[in-house]
Figure 1 (spheres, rainbow, N blue to C red):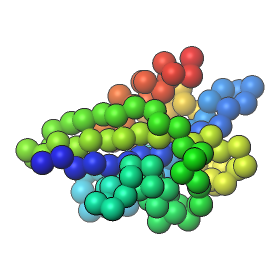
Figure 2 (figure 1 turned 180 degrees about the vertical axis):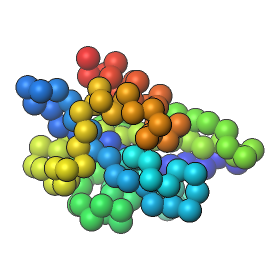
Figure 3 (figure 1 turned 135 degrees about the vertical axis):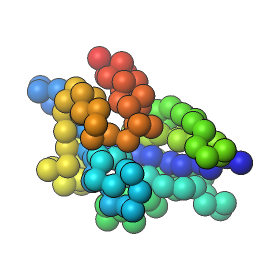
Length: 132
């Protein structure tokens, strides 16, 4: 069984570097309190990009447009006998839609190993390669 999940990584860049937006996960599992990107399961009637737009609206109350998403990369992992397919999109926050306090410098976030869900560590390494 494959569980498709869309994730959005809001970012901006300036002379100080690349900054990515995260939120603190609130859940009743071992990931509670970790920094994560907005996202969630793709419903049967949705494209991955449309699911990404919906999840950002539900989780962060920010309206983004499907056409403003840049497909980044797919990642898969096995969890409890199920394949999790993470479909990652980038969103350049040119308008400042996301709360500024949620942004963290990419290099700093990539070094916060104990504060990041395991699935996001590979994504952060690939982001560093992408932007550098």
